[in-house]
Image 1 (cartoon, rainbow, N blue to C red):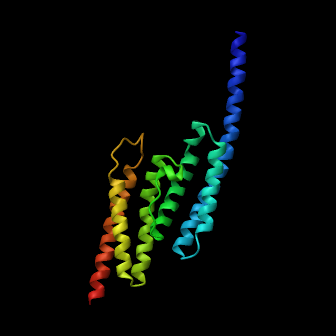
Image 2 (image 1 turned 90 degrees about the vertical axis):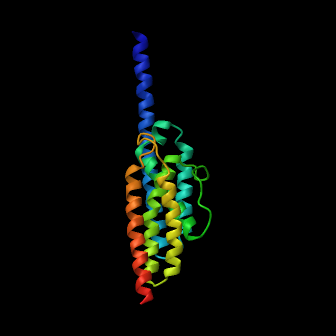
Image 3 (image 1 turned 60 degrees about the vertical axis):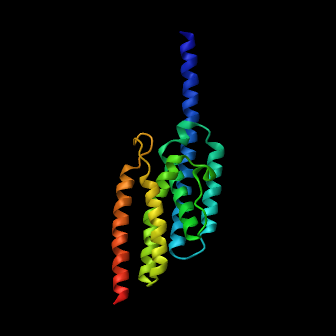
Length: 193
């Protein structure tokens, strides 16, 4: 039974190492999420957002450099940070009229990318509503076309929640699109009077 105590000691050492790595990844994930929130706030405020987005990307690259354990990389906090980063990068691309980045170009998981894409619809709706408030109906219609494309992409995923927990976000996406279609229709009708 001497081997057992050696194995237990080895496992304990591994668990200690994972715990330290987990704590460090949680702190880094929180920082990334704060930066992505600031990015999106800057986008909505029509302020320069690149500085926050670039810092978030840099912090994520640093996180990827020290997290090489699947138990940590696929944990809740890191997944949340990846999804938020994807959302911020996608929103920035839409606003700047650039190509939407792929999950591989962002170095995030496909699941995090899809969740970020789905969440981006709410942010796009906010931009569209701001345009309607400013009576910029044509620009709002353009945003609606982008939203429709994003929604169609989000709705195309039909896999079990254990692989991609997107069903609830698909329901939210449908609701967002229905409300937004009504808002655009009302604005167009009001503008014709």
